[in-house]
Figure: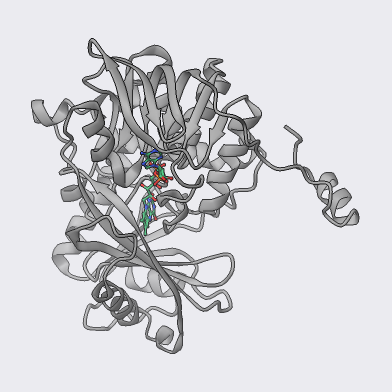
Length: 414
Ligand SMILES: Cc1cc2nc3c(=O)[nH]c(=O)nc-3n(C[C@H](O)[C@H](O)[C@H](O)COP(=O)(O)OP(=O)(O)OC[C@H]3O[C@@H](n4cnc5c(N)ncnc54)[C@H](O)[C@@H]3O)c2cc1C
């Protein structure tokens, strides 16, 4: 892989940017691979990268029915934090945050990780009490979390109206949390995986899984059959479809989650601002747009558009908190299909089919998990044994009842 550096930027700028090479190859599909990963989103690509880099497995294909990063990995609001309640989630998501802190160097691609803090607001005395408990639990987990008063909040975010219908009584902030550029994360992992010998095959849909005597042996695609020693699927909103191909069911519902951006304005929002009660979160992108999100649509759907009432609710919620934004125009709105589990914790690891692995159920919060998701799934695939950090995230928890209920504990999971 040709490394990016200040020197290479200058050299190429002087040459009119005509000698950059494509950042990944367009290889022919081979008949057989050691590992086939279905889904070239952040999770599929990072799994391939760590498999090749850390475990020396290089005969890997990552298939995508569309284009890489065209699923939720390129549609999310980029929130990256580790302030989860349960110790298992905290350990996993903090591993991810730490990998994000060095990701630009590791994959030699600027992912624009900006640790600007995630500020969560409380609007009632009850909520403030829950926020205190939540923040303390996070600290017990060894993760930074600071309670803030209304005057602290006004200092951090001067535009917030503290006395709206939902008065702001306090909150907490994780200062190491922040946002990064989602396309860069997908492209950076794709480039690094490709440089480690991984074949990324776009426009190639997995249509069936070949299973013999309870063991996966290959994948049927719209471009022919591929035999594979091991197969992993990381297909976000289509987890139930792939599980169906393998003959088992997963407790997942698929819903559209929307996001939207305003026209660009000068820097005015310092943090990633979040309110569980009003149900919205917002940050300002590097281009100056206000990036806004909220809850998922209230019905099950595979349409990547989302309903209009949610747009209205999200905008109304933002204006309750920051009335100054009322003169902004909304530029774009989009949606992705999120696969939501009953406890809002992902399902990762081995499946009832031998040599078939899954990484799904990321719901509304799997972007922040891309580095750790790839790292731990690569370990799991290479050793046929769940990585210790994801040992409790397996499908079997829905039989044993050992759920990790972040939905109840942390509320919003973006
Ligand atoms: C609007 C929105 C906002 C979000 N905000 C945040 C946030 O702020 N922070 C956060 O942490 N998370 C957020 N998320 C969630 C996050 O985006 C996802 O959890 C994460 O991107 C999932 O990554 P993935 O690689 O598993 O899936 P994806 O990126 O969706 O990739 C899956 C890929 O699988 C492919 N595929 C599907 N079926 C097949 C098949 N049969 N054959 C071949 N390929 C197939 C698809 O084409 C797709 O490219 C948000 C999601 C949405 C929709």
